[in-house]
Length: 276
Image 1 (cartoon, one colour):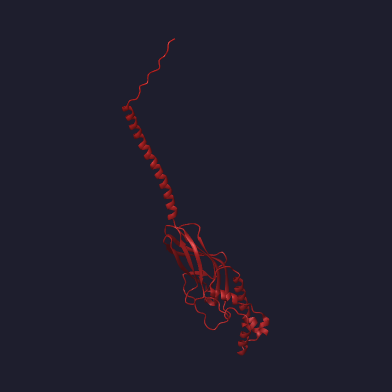
Image 2: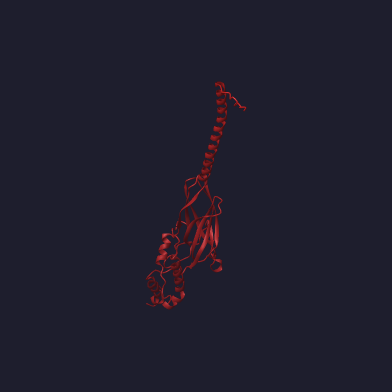
């Protein structure tokens, strides 16, 4: 039987070990560099994504304040917003949607009705529920900053006899939203109740509790009319205005303290008071 002798393996020398170690080092260094590059890219990608999110504009509502009843200021609203993002936010347009409108004629005049002035935005006097009026805006908010700006409102409506201005006020309940930063969905600011061009005054647009008797007394003092004539003449106007004021008082829309007082004071007169 012939035995096969195992092939003798050459034992590595010290020079062989040194040469292999050099090759291992050459291969390991590039692999380590590749690993570091991949890790850096991964971290950089996350940081870039985070920076993009943090850097974008993020407009937030703070408050919507109705300004109505101060004779030195035109009727309008103040919008308060905050930019919580890292980029500047641009508010480009206000959208004013009419939810309800009431026309309150002047019931008793003590002189000429002052003409309304020009306003930044005119609401149509014949507006109906669902109508939307847009106002261009050019507000820019720096990152992490607050801003407050005002929109003055008036009524573009003759509505009276012979093309004259409507002798009274318009009560508008409107929802306000603003377009910003090119987004399709506007930022809702809330709902307000405004009386334009002024807040209705007691005795001219509506009666307070107990005021009918005093008014009837002054009418009779000058022999102007009997209670029946007074009821058929001016009472329908005061009644209709009071009912409109009491109707809008139920709304949850924000309103100025001056308008809130008028809503709270108005009462619907009844014929028994006129006869007493």
